Length: 467
Image (cartoon, rainbow, N blue to C red; front, side, top):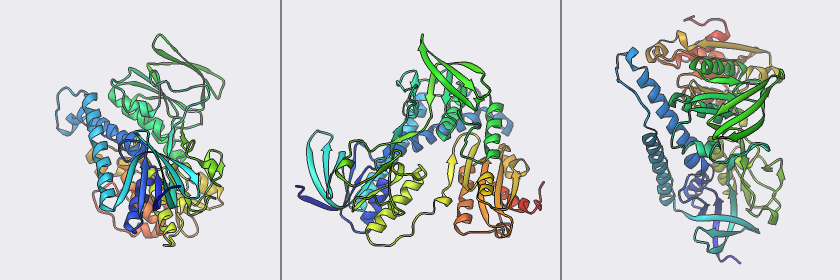
């Protein structure tokens, strides 16, 4: 039987797990984190959000340097140093990871490198990196083991020619031709990276539009921009077969119209989703229930096993780092008896960091209509915004979806410059249940990109000024 006892054991140190642990430390709970990797931060920090955005920033700088002459900045020959880009990415990852480690020390959170397995009744078996095994007891356990890259039944990553996002972050050279399977956030971000790095990129999506979870107008704008940049997109297209011959990836795809496409690439990137990681963590010793590859929890992330919570990519909520963090905080505050409010998942911002960027929150126009709302919308293009002209990024727009009767803001959808930052204003608006009129009467500084949000609110009433 375990002889070392804790108030809380957290299995996994991603943005859900480490945030949960820090909040537990702040509340004075004796907390232990178990992490399989040698560094803290989980997939988001080590192999996901942070390193991907570091490479996207390199791509942005490369693009700005190439276009510098039109702003009066002549850079001469501009080239990519991929080795240096990876070095920058790795420095950022390590800095952030060490930052988490510092926060653990500050808040008296202990951690061990190893894997955790539930043995029931609050007992966790820890297999350390050196192979030693021990048991610990906890009053509460938070499962935060995250997810991993998924394959398709007929297409599996080999790490060489058929790769996933983990592999893409470590490519030593830019492929001449890159096939991207999947036009969700992962596929579109890597397509945007490698196109600007110099690859000839083709994106294939099974559904009828790129970024299929976004508002249809946003999807159309991103697709138009990608095509204008020189990225080929095929939507409503199924890849039936993939073969690797002579160092070349050959993909046979069929469109919704029945047309056959023969596609070739030096590499194929699978961006087809992720799979929750919970095999081998001892769920069979507990009452935790699993449905369709997700752990079943209540509104406070409690599983059916007393004292055991699950957060992040393990459960059927949006698989986003910021959602996992909020779930971690809520779960810990709940187990500590602080009575936190449940998370309102209708108010989760979603960001895609391709070029152009996308930021959205709330209902799309179609979703609002499906829910029975009498909908009014207002859109305003960045082409009519002075700050957008200054920075030379005039593509895209802000679209507001509102209820016609009371003017309640139901959703905001932004595609264009700094959309992933601009969406924060919309997040506050939805959280505060603001109406369009309240946004109209909010003074926005000039010249800023935020003015597009103000003008979109005016446009709901057909009263936009600068168009």
